[in-house]
Image 1 (tube, helix red, strand yellow):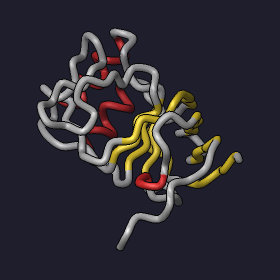
Image 2: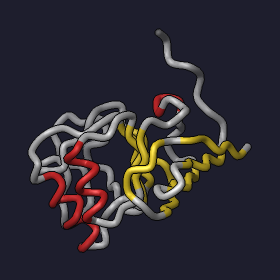
Image 3: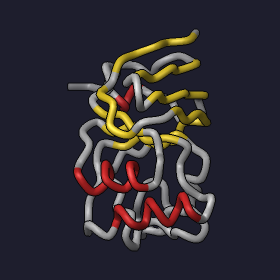
Length: 142
């Protein structure tokens, strides 16, 4: 099944890849290794996983404004996500996506908790759309 849903456009461009969903916010300064693209934050649900080439979906960012530069460094090192989906974009992640030329959307019409890791996704940060090639997870409990 292919679903197309709307989102708010944040950073222009199109990116596609396998979806990597985080149930927790992500801090890029000291939480992601800019040389490898690996999440290194101790205790993070994605600790040890690489975000390189993925469509990274998470609620919002956290931490220092230097996180924007880490996203830029990830792009420069070829280890950036192909695209980002946030529930609500914060300035740190939005600026990092823009300066790193990483397509980004937020406020998707589908709750990111219903998106399945590993599903093929295409994000259009210019048009504000997400193409999702799979089934959604059940609605999370209220």
